[in-house]
Image (cartoon, rainbow, N blue to C red; front, side, top):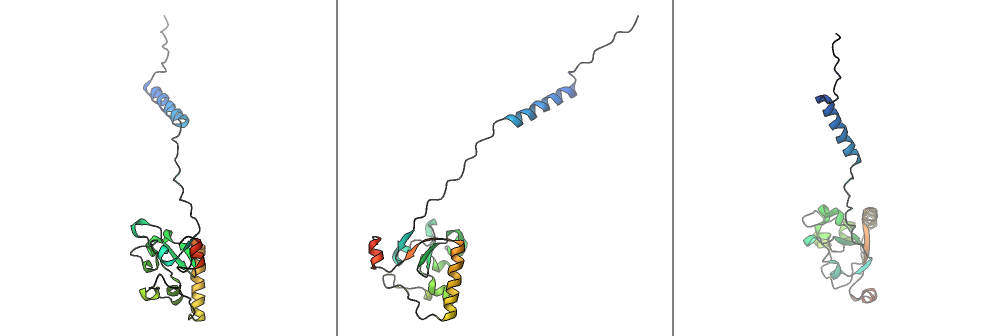
Length: 164
């Protein structure tokens, strides 16, 4: 009598592992992806008119933005907080008119105007090479930072129009 033949079962351990792996890969490929959340956009910056006293609070203290003026234009240098913020090498310029110090290449306190209620520094006694240095700084800031306003003296017509 012939010997009986046995049919091979597909339920072998290796086939079960391969089937489980197949379903896992199908699940991973077809499952819904988690929704990505975009970061909140930065608050819009409005071009403003500043006087020396209204510019002073923007020194980076208490995590405030860092602004300073160069040749009558106010720049938001907050992206350079390590340089212009508290403890940085240019921190004394934050919230102030930095024009004279940048023109002379001096970062000392005596380069800053002390009377914030008085007239702006006219920069009338700068030499030609100092004017060129100031223009170079101004161009560098234009490339890297946003201009957020202009600096006008206290009591000027522009300051009155801006409600300062």
